Image (cartoon, rainbow, N blue to C red; front, side, top):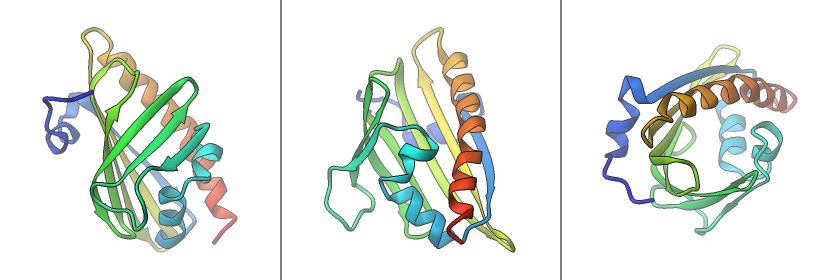
Length: 154
């Protein structure tokens, strides 16, 4: 799924992105460990599996495969600020998109942290709005699951 779209630019396009926020009653360290691990994604996001295909330590250039239902998505990490932020783009996916990127930012708060999750899509003609709407609905449904999962760990 090669893309002509510059990923940092895509993440800034208002009509091609959504930004979700979720307060977490967990430290940034706890949230970071969950988001960069592999097991928790199956519990909060509903992924069937998540596995790194590059060796640790992970960072910019690392890759992982996420299986969601019948889809297998190869992700390439483009930003990695240890303990604070990571972003990736899809390298391969069966979704009807030209480019897809996600950015996860953890901001410390007095009660834990807030996750800022930006999802950016350059979809095929006619499905852009549907893909973004689906991602917004999925985020609204799944982020509270992440909050509940992490609340028990702090």
